[in-house]
Image 1 (cartoon, rainbow, N blue to C red):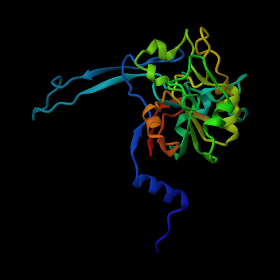
Image 2: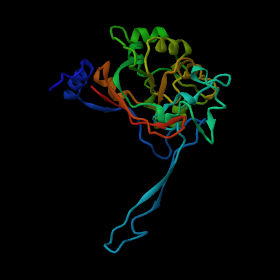
Image 3: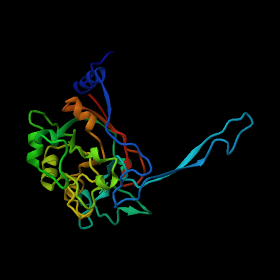
Length: 272
Ligand code: UVW
């Protein structure tokens, strides 16, 4: 018996047939930008070729990698944020962390992201190359940027600021003193009301960061992760995607299944 693909699968297959694969993330490497809230990335070869050589002349090299779970292009699990000691759905944050890991909402419970995504290109909307430091993206900006594009429940919204243009200058990109553009609490409510599963941004913290305030105040994180159960992906890069003019795409990002962790590196791609 043959079965017809579901409309969703048929759409995906059509996209795959015409696909251009666009990387939406950054490489993990020493010296990359890192939020002051997280331990940075460090990699070192532990065993080099020639350290141990077998009878046939063969050898294996390997490395030690040390990194925070929220370094580089990553996804936030729902246990990453709490407000007044409570996580999403009123789960008590203290009792949900046992033996150095979370027993509820750990990143291992986050299913792969394989869905349609839409791009809200805010610099294109405003006719600028990239947003100014500390620029606050509102729900109105998002509605205007997404005009004419349907957003369905369970999909993903990519919010572009143009900030990856500064990625090679970690101090400017992290923006502790100068601020970083990002979504306001108002924008977060707008996105959650769309029913999306995740919001992806191209900045270090997704939230708008005010000058001199560091990464301490993250109101959009509270709205999305704690109040509404919407995942956040950060440190993506939509610069190449923006040049294609695509406003919708097939989006894939797979978290590592690290038991009880609050976040995980991902490799997000768009098929357009
Ligand atoms: C920051 O780096 C502030 O982002 P998050 O902690 O949400 O991963």
